[in-house]
Image 1 (cartoon, rainbow, N blue to C red):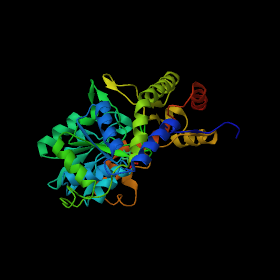
Image 2 (cartoon, rainbow, N blue to C red; image 1 turned 90 degrees about the vertical axis):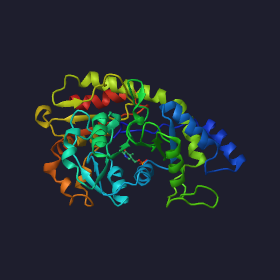
Image 3 (tube, rainbow, N blue to C red; image 1 turned 120 degrees about the vertical axis):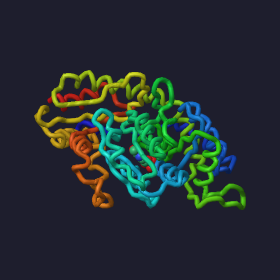
Image 4 (cartoon, protein in one colour; image 1 turned 135 degrees about the horizontal axis):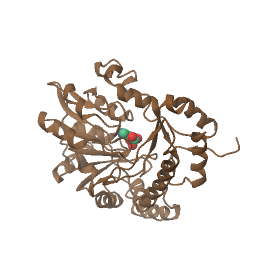
Length: 369
Ligand SMILES: *Cc1c(COP(=O)(O)O)cnc(C)c1O
């Protein structure tokens, strides 16, 4: 194939010279991990950028989920969505809890609040919703149910970096919000993640838990784990934070170009911006109605692939279909009709800061036939 491949994403990389200077500082200081100066600076800078009161950095975006469940002492059953990346459900399983899948709604791809109450049992202790594709899920409705039944809410906000609703950070919703700074996300620190919390006492507890439970040189207050972010990644993260707005704006332009071209295509659905929401354009999912479009999702997916366009079918297959989970009563397909349908319709088109107008045109030409 002569045309270059277009991948679904491309990592945002800091300037190498600038990164080199920060690396020299790290080398000179010989302080390479354990809450060093870049770690402190990045926590502060992220609190400002994200408009959140307290944040704890992690080594990836899965460990903050695990740690949030630990910190809130979640046991028994946790209500969650099958339409996400596997780490959401794995974090529940790794805490010895039972995931209970609730169907999603088509308009946000988030958990359907109208179906939550029917899934609550005396063993339910928490709800773990996901703001899928960075689209705000129905958090206020979810929180109201949680309050009514005394449940905790752990928001998997791995896609929701920088999302604001009516000028307020979306990450302040729920008891805690978890972020991923993986290479495939809008903002990356190579690997990395964070937990957003509301008060200093909770941040302290999270910081103990991510450092073996150490509360001082000789005092261990909890059976913690090691999930600290090191200085090299914190420095890298500081540089990427300076350019993330520009990257989001470039993604925005790509979204505009996709939407304009797809507006009148029968059988292709996509998301428009929501009023009052600052979006991050982390993904551009389209949903194929095979009958109307005249081709199935997979036919289009492989046709794109043949021509070097590597979209991804996020989130197919559903988490509830994987071997660990498919035996759970809540994993039954009849329980998850909307998620099942969406998983069979979705393709995430290439979406990143380096896509040019011609790249997008090349992709669109295939979709428009
Ligand atoms: C990426 C992702 C995670 C896990 O993040 P890692 O940094 O890869 O560990 C968790 N939940 C969702 C929804 C994600 O997309």
